[in-house]
Image (cartoon, rainbow, N blue to C red; front, side, top):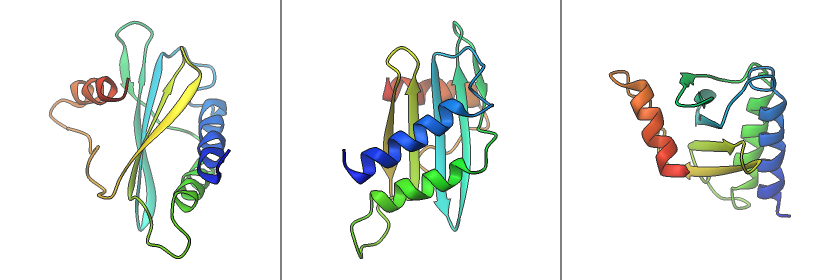
Length: 126
C-alpha cells in the first residue's frame, strides 16, 4: 500500500467512524475538502431511497487526515498536488475513493439547486 493509499484509508475510516455518519442510514457520502489557506469541508449524505441532505463530519481531527492525504499525494519537494478533493464513500462496496483538482472551485455548491448539484456530482463518481 502506498503512502497515499494508506492516507486515504485513514481518512475514510475516520469519516465512517464520525458521529455525523456512524449511526446514520446512508447509501453514499460525498465530502468536498478545499485547502486554500485553511481546510474547509462541505458534503452530502444520500439515502435511504432518494433522500439527499447537506452533511459533514463532526470531528475536526478529520481535517488533519485531509492534510495528511494532500502531503502523501505531493511529490517530495514539489508543490501541493491539489487544492480540492472529492471523497466518495459507497456503503454497498465499503470503499472510499478520491478525486483531486488543482483549483478550489470545481465542486463548489450550487446555491440555486444544491440537491440537484449533489445528485449530478454523485452521478459523476458512481
